[in-house]
Image (tube, rainbow, N blue to C red; front, top):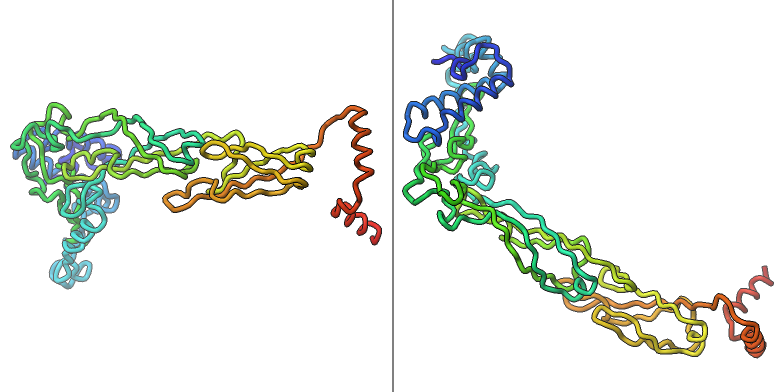
Amino acid sequence: MADLYESLGLSKGASADEIKSAYRKMAKKYHPDQNPGDKTAEAKFKEINSAYETLSDPQKKANYDRFGTADPARNFGGGGGGGFGGFGQGMEFDFGDLGDFIFNNFGFGGDMFGGGRKGRMRGSDIQASVILSFQESCLGVNKTITFSRMEKCKDCNGSGARNGTDVETCSYCQGTGRVRQSRGFGGFSMVTPCSACNATGKVIRNKCGSCGGKGAQKKTVSYEVNIPAGIADGQTLNIAGEGDYAVGSPDGMSGSLLIAVRVTPHPLLMRDGFDLFLELPISFTQAILGDKIMIPTVDGTTILVIPPYTQNGARHILRGKGVKRLKQMGHGDLIVKILVEIPKSLDRRTIDTIRALNVQIDDSEYPKTKAYRDRLRRG
């Protein structure tokens, strides 16, 4: 068996950084993609992967440096009676089924690596944003947004190969997209994604000239999105299948387009859920005599009737004049709060007129004022 350090071109006792650097350099040199059909390079690639698998693990490296093997239990357990109590005989656990379970149920070869027996690879999500006016958010609108995403290459139909015959089964994993590696005591094995084919089980010999073998290309697209009525500032629209194409997986699923919604405020209306609020100032004469006042709504304006003797703080509720309930039936309400405004200054003649008027008004017309005075006297 070749010395593991020599396999990576290192001397015994090399540091973790030196081991990692040497492995990356040699793996790139002997990778099957760089040496198509070269059996010698393929064997060397397997050798350096095996060496790195041991030397990158601190415990295995320590065992190898001390005993010449990453698994000393095998050397000291033979015969069933010595060393570590016979771990080398009669107790060799083959966790191959467990490896399969981990591989298939925790993403290996499925969605995570895109080349296993289960699941489909999924492309990345894309973030975008749209700015709406207050009215657009309440009533709904169609907006066109522009963004970039990875799209399936039309020339190779996402395969990454120049033509159909340029895709071959990976010889390192035999097309399974995974490899089994021995770990720990007694032959414990773990199934891991194949690094030679990125867990796809396929190797491209002649790459597509349009996409460089990726199977996808970056494109700028204009997309018309239907903004539903009732959407609020800060919400996000999730449009499935409009994100990045699943690069490296012709049968994969594209990610989602996530659109963050921003709404510009209305100069008068305030929104709370699906209800709208308006503070409406009126003069004290309007409050006494009554009036008809134009007020804003989500779709234009309407007339609000102010009855005579309207009090400050009075509330008028216009049912169904609020925001359309998002993806539901019905609308919220428009709630108008009355603010009676007193003049800041008046001329003497007007003041005298008001004083004369005040004398003619009976105190009983001010029930709150009368109640206050009564409580004050009793207190």
